[in-house]
Image (tube, rainbow over all chains, first blue to last red; front, side):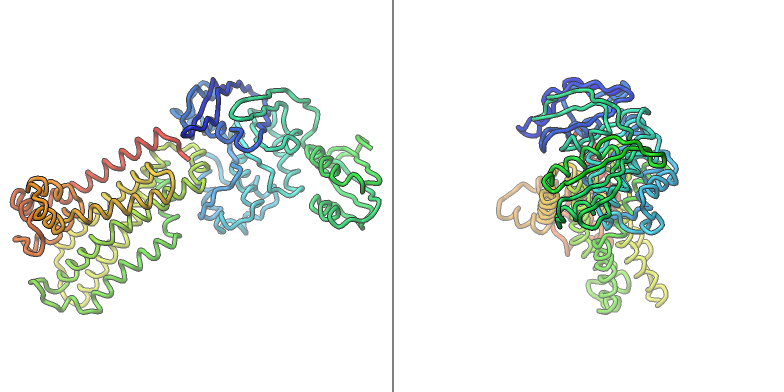
Length: 292
Length: 275
């Protein structure tokens, strides 16, 4: 579906992509990971036809630079840094829907499902929204249209836990439908969303591996946490995860795809954890023990 | 609606919300108001009277400030949008580069031309109401000249925006271009010619090529066929082309120049990195 053939890109004297060759097929959900300057964003821009480059990039046999409209009509894109657009949200949705040949109501539906009150933000300048609101709007534009290639640059970075859960559920609904390419600095952020990991370093692919595909993206885990003593910093972190508690006992829900992130967070406070219970289940189904 | 019209409408909406547009409109509206307040329609200097006097003064002021306004606002917004990551996102949508680029240019032309024209049209309407008398043929010529000048500098602005990779470089380039064209106006060329013994043909060719010069000469030739208030290059050009010929040249040349500049900009835009 997508092939990168020996793609190289040089800015002045800096070689940012150095002979990247990849083949992506339908059903691939790829985590594109690597440190800053690894070449992730440049590779995405080559895929979007925004950069000139050596080598070839083909999407369904078409070059994105010479067949922009045909290729980009298949691509939903969420950038890492939302653009500072001064236009009202309604105008952005209207423009995007019209050039994508989509119904604005579909984009609005995704935005509202993510927890945004569209009626309230419709006339607000996009640039004035909070980071999370911008992210939700751009996700709405990307998911609220017919696209079989989804490219997302750190898409869930600014989302609260509830919005992350809904976002993961939306991705789950279309996970085998096409290709998904998610970039991140950290694998634990996106590990549960993907079935293939590509790591880049210094403009080269240094790892291309399949990963287990067992996590249900729509699942949630009930968590009960007992601390050995109250701790202010830990309490603040748990409240960020929307946990309720009295200082010692804490209860909350962890999105299935977020479990690795949650464990990573807990590892920073290992000495404070006196007990931990995680019970997995579908959101509205009876829960079964998974990890204790 | 086509992607081209959508892109044009988007640029118009963005510009109408921008502070520069408010300032820009206030400057040109303010010039007309001030010319009325200072009683320019009543004065009789060099044979111009009534609204003609006001229009001549207005157009002379336009030649000095309109190009730099257009250049700076265009390069700031186009190069600024690219620098801020707006191109990265907007050009990830399935819109053709031709629709995006030319739509942006037409949208921008609408917003830079309309305030200048409406200020002049407002003056004409007011004069009609006050029964001062409006020289409509002059009004039509000046409208054409303003279209021509605006399009020309918009084309330069689009080209500079494509060439420069940052708003600062684009702004510096725009300012330098304006300064060079201003320096190569007729009277300054005369000074160069006298001091440096530059051949007359070179001086006249430079004057002909300069869209600011053609605008300035055409704006005044209806009143001053001997070009006593302008310089010798204008006189030579006018002598060769005649009044109508020169007017046609002054309307067509800047449009052609702006179109070529914008087209070169478009070719470079297509060939290079977009964000």
